[in-house]
Amino acid sequence: MSGLPPPVGIDQLSFCTAGSFLDLKTLAHAREIDWHKYYDGLGQEKMAVPALDQDTVTLAASAALPLVQHLNKNHIELVLFATESAVDQSKSAGLFVHGLLDLSSNCRVVEFKQACYSGTAALRFACMFVAGCPNKKALVLTSDIARYPLGSPGEPTQGCGAVAMLVTAHPRILALEPESGLHAQDVMDFWRPHYRQEAVVDGKYSAHMYMSTALACWERYAAATGRSLEAIDKFCYHLPFTRMACKAHAHLLKNVRGCEPTAAEVNRHIKNSLHYGRVTGNSYTASIFQGLASLLDHTQEDLAAKRIGFFSYGSGCTAEFFSGIVQEGYGLHLFSKQHGELLAHRTELDYEQYKAMFTRCVPTDGGIHTFPQGHTGPFRLAGIREHKRIYERVQNSPA
Ligand code: CAA
Image (spheres, rainbow, N blue to C red):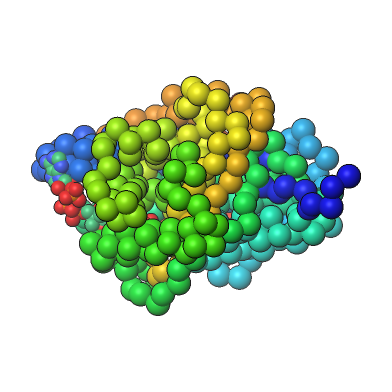
């Protein structure tokens, strides 16, 4: 037996998004903007719009259900919930999910925050935990609802979604490598004060920070590993909108090599990671892992033994470049069919329906409110009673 520690990483991953969407052609028409700006300029076609009875908890629980329903739940001793759309200032959203999934009480449950980056931090911490206790498992939940003011430049980049990842030793999908390239800097490119439902953003500055930190993180990763760009077979980026990843990747290739990359090369590296983000919109913490699911679900060639590079960016800002190796037989453990069905069975909204859903918020008066059944996954927010959120399993839900 070798003295090497076992590989740790993502054993399975699954995503969930809202049951309704707005086509960005509809939004462009309402805003009197050429729809090509959204489809081609931002690389976004649709944005997922959550119902009143859908929030980051129900999205995360619905994403996680397929991972835990056939598992001995006693093995999960850590639940990390990464979000920047928390439902409570004190209680971790993970505890609601812990209850909905009926997990063991012998468990640590914590919420992580640092804009869109915290999912990566949660994954890294979960890997450290499992590396120390290889017979235990961790559940990492990334879940967000991206909201900007109506009519603002950020509006077409809204969206929502959750990705749940089971982190284990000897993972069946992706073994993470230990090295990272990090960058942290106190900047105000995007933020959301406690009293606001919508983010405040300096859009152009945020895009500039995203691009420059991608290069800074790559340089540190390359120095730590001695690897060149050629050592990475595919790339997954944080996806505020899919063109952001295309631009950042082209910027990275150009600056590292000193010449412009071809569009074909950029596409070969990242195109398959963009399909889900293009039709759900930004899901903040979840988006980079939704990109991984998209890459694995859509790539025909066998990715076993290939190295995937990840660039995770969280405004404010913290960023990280890291990598992982796809495991032999990974294709047997994907939820590609469920992901395709989820997206195929969504309901399209017209502009007035979108606006009504956007402006409806959970009441804050401390009264007793029940919410109508929307188009959700297997869990829903049934209501709120004296400031307590009441969640329930949807009867006859598919999962
Ligand atoms: N046909 C085709 N393309 C068109 C077009 C048309 N008719 N009209 C404009 N375009 C192109 C523009 O040329 C531009 O492309 P380039 O960047 O390649 O020049 C693209 O469409 C966007 O146009 P604008 O730059 O004029 O768009 P904007 O200023 O209205 O808004 C934005 C862009 C600032 C990114 C805005 O969407 C925004 O604020 N988004 C939220 C912030 C964000 O997503 N930041 C990303 C980095 S921060 C991060 O990643 C964290 C996070 O999740 C928020």
